[in-house]
Length: 124
Length: 305
Image 1 (cartoon, chains in turn brown, cyan):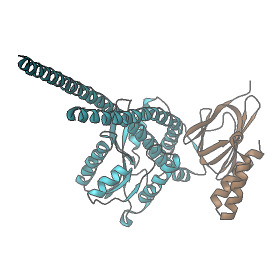
Image 2: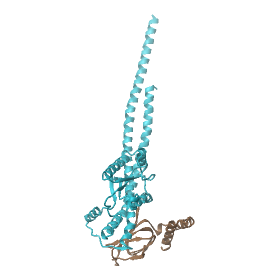
Image 3: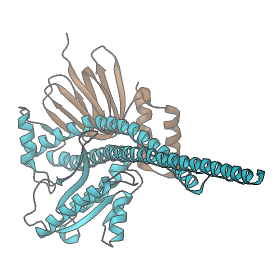
Image 4: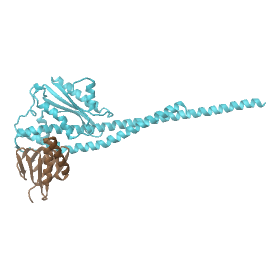
């Protein structure tokens, strides 16, 4: 059996995803980081970006995460985000509309949010 | 119908209408408590993970951050008071306000200036009526607060904490809200949110017999702490808002239950009175008829002779 780590992806108001995984890739402020079982304890600041979780069953879970933290200790990985959505939950048509609207309104933050959502859907 | 009876009937009708309203409010509040409790539970994983992370950074590194170190001579404190938007919730808002008053008194006694921040229309009205200064206030979401609301509240508070004391910044941040213990018990509590009292956090951690590992910070301990503490404040405020909402609904349910029970009692005693009045009316009518008939009979008997 391959080594596994336990992942908890939590948003401010709900538990988004939890389960066993073999690899988690997330974007921190200093670049993308991949965490595998047995990684040294880590606490980092996340950027807005897609998070990829390779589950132990061989599947892949992609989520759009907007700001937050990654912390890893004792083979337990927690992804804390103010807003987090799984790729399955994202309405890509709505995100596209939001992206256009944000571009028109010149709202950089909203544009990035919509962009991250679309990338999460595409990466699925 | 006699005048007395009519008055009783009218009062019974009006009390019945009131009872219907209070009963409906009681049931609405009861259903909302469950929802609010579920929200509290849903926000717990985030809050506890964040707590762990804050403790890890604060204890695992030698970083000195304005938000974790106590000022030598704290001169100003901010108090965030959470009340409700609407009334009809018994002593819910006034109890929270009383707790805030007591805390303010204590802080003033320690020689600190107090800036008051208020959530909820009831608190704003209380301070407005007494013409007291309020640094900032928010209304309109105490029924079902969202994380965005908590962020909106936290923004100016974090700004005030990070500002220099001379420039109007505060050294301490306190929060007063009503803690939801159970359906029957809700207590107004005051907590000091900042600066973090690490001894207390550590005590709680050590109780769990958990040794915190040495973390590798990405990008650096200072940056992590910088990003972490505003989130920590937001999540604490969010949790307080949710608990306050649950308490508000519980208090309203209890107040409305008492009102419904009282209305039932009132209807009962009023219908007793109405029955008595009706009976008195009937008795009077019978005695009038009997009296009239006998008078008639006496008159007839006299003319026959």
